[in-house]
Amino acid sequence: MDYAKTAKDILKEIGGEENIVSVVHCYTRLRFTLKDESFIEDKKVEDIDGVLGIMKSGGLYQVIIGNDVAKCYKELMKITNLDENETKRPEGNKQKQNIINRFFNMISGCMAPVLPALIAGGMMKVVQLIIVMLDILPEESQSYRLFTAIGDAPFFFLPILLAASSARYFKVSQTLAVAVIGVLVYPDFITMMGEESVHFFGIPVTAASYSYSVIPVLLIVWAMSYIEPFVDRIVPTVAKNFLSPLLVLLISAPIAFIVLGPIGAIASNYFTDALMFVYDTTGIVAVVLLSAFMPLIVLTGMHQAFTPIILSSITTLGFDPLILVAQLASNLSQGGASLAVGMKSKVKKQKQIAYSAAFSALLGGITEPAMYGVTVKLKKPMIACIISGGLVGAFTGFFQLKTYVMATPGLISIGEFLGGVGNTNIIVAVIASALAIILSFTLTWFIGFDEKEADIDTTKKKKSSTAQATKTTEKEIAVDSPVSGTFVPLTEVKDSTFSKKLIGDGIAIYPDQNKIVAPFDGEIEAFFDSKHAIGLKSDDGIEILIHIGLETVNLNGQYFTGHVKKGDRVKKGDVLISFDKEAIKEAGFDLVTPVIVTNSGDYEVKIPSLDHIKKFDEIIYVSKVDNALVG
Image 1 (cartoon, rainbow, N blue to C red):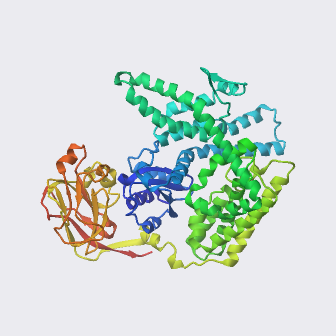
Image 2: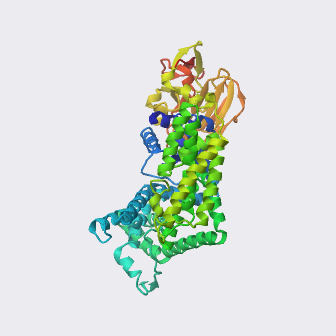
């Protein structure tokens, strides 16, 4: 898979780098916070080779890639100026989110970077359990103790890991956040928390254990996002280098262990109590419902918000009786259904996708490739998974299955169910795993699924460069300039979205007028709320983006006046946008204006020799290209 091309195509379809507030990735998806989603055509994003699907939830635009999402993310970083070490707060979309969505997005955004360490630690704990069960090493041996250290470290120092990731989210100094949270896991502090009473200058410090904790860390780092700016405002410039960090540490640390840490610890206990209340009150019903509908939760991406609850449950109770148990039934059902599709499908491409997805779901418990590539896409297999998950949930609920280690449930991590009295728990887990695979496989096989070879990936096949031949079939069409000004080659524009021609070919103009006019007869296809850019489609089918200035979206419409709206018909010469050129320059923005043929993949684009451009000068020549399949 050419993930460089996948990343380039995704960037083009979501509006380029300037439309991105932030992007992170989890195990299978790119999670974008965008300034504007209204103009994005979801079908075009889904049809990109390498994209399994998209999901919009809680203000996030999520592009599902699958197991190789990290490769796609790296390619995206290469062609943009986005900082992969900085997770920006999604302020641009807050107005679109309610407080619950914002809370879950915050949990997901902060937890996603630390999950690999937690999964690795969880798998090491599974190895430890197997070592003890098979009597490979005595528990008192140094080798076993070192194994224990490897498995325990990611959880014991989870507050430190989370401090670093949440500092990026809340835009706080990482080193100061780690220093403040480090106080809570400092050996002498831990010792004092075991004493009868602890006071800080007469103020009582509530005893709490912060290893393995999540909620206290998030509260503290969130508070630091207000403390740091406050300190920065009151400290004189001459003393900022040494006095600001000192004051932030002196203010934040006491607030952490006197106020926010205990509040967070109490909240964590309430989460655990609430989980057990639901489990004790509803019994099997809770396990059945969560097992059946876990795929729908995963589809929204909100399953990561369960992580703090799972950690709190395992830390406090020693086990999780609900969430990971439900995920076992759901994950293996997805794997069984995908395996059935792979064996029954008559379409080669679908068979390949299904087998790969089954492998990920069955062994590693990673289900997004199965859902987006198989079960959601074919619909009936998803119904089979929901039925299978519910039935297996009834079985596990009846036998009160529990997991004793945090790991993504799959066949490789089945050892996380070792624990309890005797071997009953692990035997139930093994039987449940077999039931989930057999039931989902059987239901999918007999319920069947609808597939038509012509409907599967035809768009992607057409995009394959190895299966295409191109030829010019029509005469050249000229695109006129929408404004007078100085010609600037597109490759010299100081924005990689344009200079690397990620969204199409064209030119740029440094305008000497304050108005943009229609370069042809056509229709307004897109008009940004910020009025800094407009998309048009000519009657000949040519799609043009006119983008006034660089980063001018940040002006939020100031100094721009729109004279049309999306869907309007325009004639050549109609005024589209007027703007205050001098005010924009004084505000510090580059006024270079790219004029891009956004569907240049359908045309052969030629740029004539240009210097100073007058309005309605011919600036771009396009000729229709016929993409004919030859393979």
